[in-house]
Image (tube, rainbow, N blue to C red; front, side, top):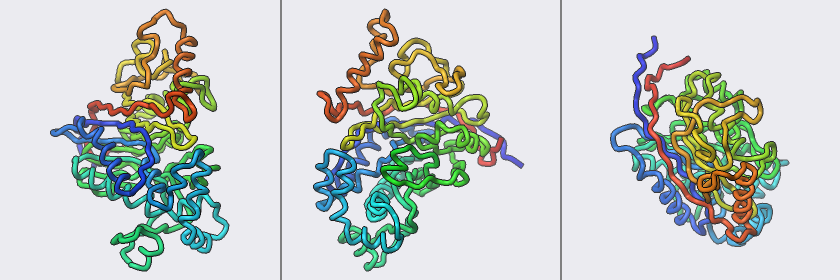
Length: 406
């Protein structure tokens, strides 16, 4: 028999940090502490908390250390990967011996497993316990095996370390780690629906839909949907069938924000397909979406966007530009259907929507001004990498019975 449902207030926080390339592992750990600290100030002292961080937050750790010096100075991501190879050569050879036929990007990620996983996972576990919050973010990593064997540490780990994380297979995933308020790893969720760059440039492996499971917690039944997963109806139906109520969406949109996307005329309008599209009535249990958007230029790759917290029961967009810049109405760009729900919180972009101060402007005029600034933020622009860092929060009302299934 199912437990009776009780409503609980939950504090949700989303942090949109600007990506950097720390030179050392210690600096990477300090950067994670700083990023979590951006959101920690908004955590509640008397109700459950959920802190959502960005996608590929652990990736910069692969570029730490003296062996990655040239890679950090590279102009393009492809050059950076090539410059990493000499410093990882013994491990690259070992990976290709263990898994013949793997690509160079796959071999590089496997060779860098310990750097991509250990400081990321151990630091976020510690910070989740320190701030007593549920916490989620993603890194690139295979399935891992933990070892304190000195021989394996010498082959795969950091000099002087007491333990190491080794690749347990040839597959590499965009993996979200979800930690509880005691620092325990509650679940690992591998991204199922990959972008073209994840498939072709990084040679990542898609996760299995069946492995995406509801996470019963004191903060409600949580479900992770990494970026494109949150846009995909099959994925959303899968979480809804498990009674998930709050979608946690770590994200790093690798396209300019104030611009057209690969499939629509205006990127922020298309983003509504996820942050509002995931809380539509056709998914009866999915009521909230917490999306954290990492920003910044990483070599020649741009990450940009606005973090948001949305709810099915929140008021609809009240006026032009009141949520995402350059957006006046909430319409699903694929189906053409009006989207119900609204924003409980939204991060500001680098500039406000011009309609705020010049209401006579047309939508196309506003978008042109926004796009002009967006181009300036690109790696070769006059205001390169001047993206805004943000932290937003909202209180959600969720059911806490762990037996809840629709």
